[in-house]
Length: 362
Image 1 (cartoon, rainbow, N blue to C red):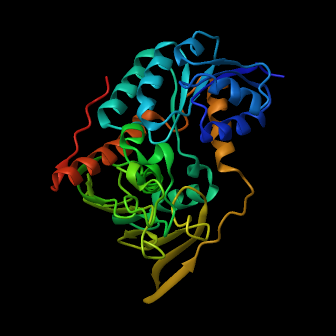
Image 2 (tube, one colour; image 1 turned 90 degrees about the vertical axis):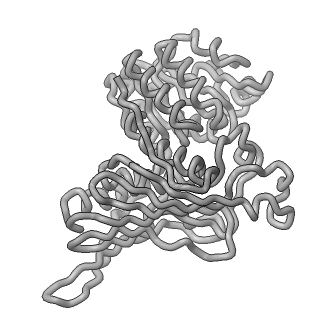
């Protein structure tokens, strides 16, 4: 048996349960503490999940006084920044759920603190752990498409609006673009090697969320439920990005990579009104190319697997804790994802194109 990895969990909402489930399936990992800002909620969570060795706290800073190898931050979005900073300053490695933060400024602060402390800052993008995501990236990185000049990504649920903390700006910071859109961005950007974004021109709306006909919490709904953006990158590359929680349409289309030698179409897995977005697995991959002058479509066989991508995400984080890093999905990379989300909200609010400026991290 190896060293027991001691984990603390900050925030005991729904996603925290998925972290517990995954940690319990890994040998030599023990959840020793849970913190939640609501009095008594951490203790209730501990009892519900049978975490007999764990202590409950109403203040995450008290949790951070414990001997911990790492923490999982499962708070509402607006708390990601401060809990991450506090955890890193306390000498703890961090796994923070998506989106990384609310603003670019917060994300930069988090990455700088990770650099200063030498601790892991890992961001929770579990769709990467579908082996077929690796297949897609491999095809592009090995030049099968030639030079990629245009990408279209995103997804849309015909009806798939969450409630509670997800729909209030003062808690979530943003809506569909940050909740499910960040996954679509990661699919495209990770495949391309995370190019540097330059400008964003965006539009967002919330016609469905604010209508009692479509949402029971319409009076509390003040984030976007739809958004679209054009993002320009270094290297003469453009991305058409679109995301929706609700719409009168079955799909916003497939993810497409257009290259000078070939094009690739990728569809998400899943069916039904809550599907059609990149928070799960790959459904199909097709390559469009010419053979002997003939227009050809080749179906790329998918890798058959039974993996839980969420559990693989947690396993990879634990592996980094055991081996001393690096972060599997490092904050400095996802900084560009967050910069785009930040730019989208700025562009939508000002109704104009905005430039993206990401400061150098010393």
